[in-house]
Figure 1 (cartoon, each protein chain N blue to C red):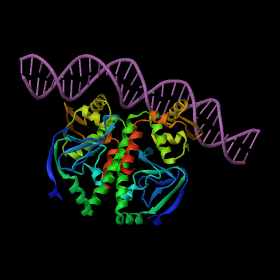
Figure 2: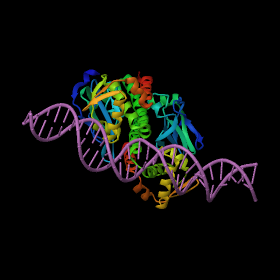
Figure 3: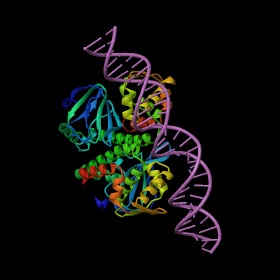
Figure 4: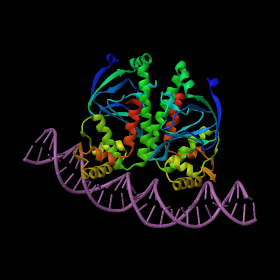
Length: 211
Length: 211
DNA sequence: CGCGAAGCGTTCGATAGCGCACAGACGCCC
DNA sequence: GGGCGTCTGTGCGCTATCGAACGCTTCGCG
């Protein structure tokens, strides 16, 4: 299957697709990190998914739909394996194992979507920020990343100031250190304690279904 | 396929399944109305889906997963066609047309999940209540329904008082009338004007993909 | 017919997050 | 090495919603 893929490089804040656009490819990230955001009232909105090398970008194609409702934004530069929509559909029909694997991934994503909705509604910014940092680190496999408060704000669906406040708090507690967009995670267990339970739930779901 | 189904009746506030439970059946509502809610921090949480005769309850089984993360709660009594998990999987494998149809339905549900997350985050209670009433009426095909403020509050993820305030406002505007759980919709266009755009977006998605 | 429960309306103080505005601080580029 | 843009920190008034509490009305049931 890899034979039908081509490796592509993505730079940060690259947009793989806009909401409403036609999907021409699916992407299997190898080192790139992609955020999926739902638009709301015209603006970019709210992150509802985070995809690294554990997942795939372009899930609607797995369901036979070529239009995506989400925006896919490169959050951390890197590479992915890209496959055209047509060969992808072809593979899917001739490889039941692949199809079953993708079904499981879809389930995980649906579960995460539901979880996100609740988390966004009920949990405080600081807990959500901690969760986000943990999830990102899991996929980045590095304890350093480059993310501005501004970007975090748009992902979490809050004001930049809200992120700054939460980040100051986390930094004062010695859990992270940051400066001008460079964030370093210093204390993972500490972050887990601050993060909402959604983090653990998410991991558990993934482990059970795809682990 | 109907031959493999049996008709079952559900009473209001019946629970088809709890989060984490094993799915033994799928249900195709005929007259029943089912709310899907995601649990959060132990409590019941937040509605993330509404299923009437346009849809199906038990979508994880369509993806080969027998454990559901959601609670399915009968919101309005009625009947559904029920099929065992095993025959359902069997049908799915031998009827590509059914499989493709379900894929499309899954896409609609995923889109709704993402939309819900944003709506819950950004929109005011009154707009969300109006949207909820419209969506429910679409599936109930009646302009009268029996729903208490308390129940609405748990679906929308707000306090009962918040629902009361919004409901008072809608009633004062002449859009609805209610008393002790009996809600009547008086002015649909008026409600649409008050509801957030999510209502239209949802309908549009459904129409495009399954209409 | 009376009583209790269910459903609804209102109030009060508290709080998380908003919108806006402005100021410092660091780094890159000319 | 001076200037400018990016990133971060802080302050102020405002609003939607929260949490808790209390009272009123209506209905059903004994």
